[in-house]
Amino acid sequence: MNSPTQILLAVSFSLIFQPASALRAEAPIPVTVDQLLAKGPEFDGKEVSVMGYYINSWKEGSCLFIDARAAKNSQPYRQSIWVDETTFNPGNPPSPPIGISELCELGKHYVRIVGHFHYRGANRSGFFRDVRFNRGFGLGGLWPSEITNIMNFRVAFKSPDDPINPCGMYHHK
Image (cartoon, rainbow, N blue to C red; front, side, top):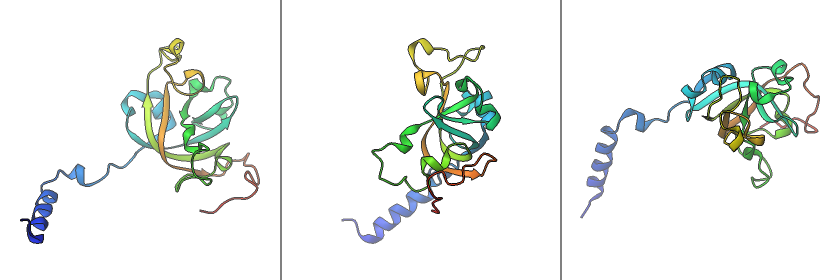
């Protein structure tokens, strides 16, 4: 029979001999949007912390850009990263999960996102390699990269074109 002392000793030994990486969670890698766009394969499958200019509209979709100027480009999938919209899925509770701001507060702002980065590749002309098979991300599968499993999504700082009250009022969480 296992006594409480034997159980305590077994747990203690298992913790002592665990690799250090198993005992602590890996911190997200701080990167820029520019780094993710230029060196996507290096960050594929990794948890990242990134700041950039976020838009969400029916025309461009849910995209993270280097800055507001890049967001005005007519082909956003060439200069942005798709941001997984399921974070704001109506199936979620009425208010966003902890660490996630309401969607109306985020659009047209510089934001900080912590989530998992995925990359599928683009050819030399900048187009997604398998666009005809819709294997990219986002609208029409045009984006070669995406951020999913978002754990933190907040306004980083106000931009010059910041709407006064995007949701009717700012929520302080």
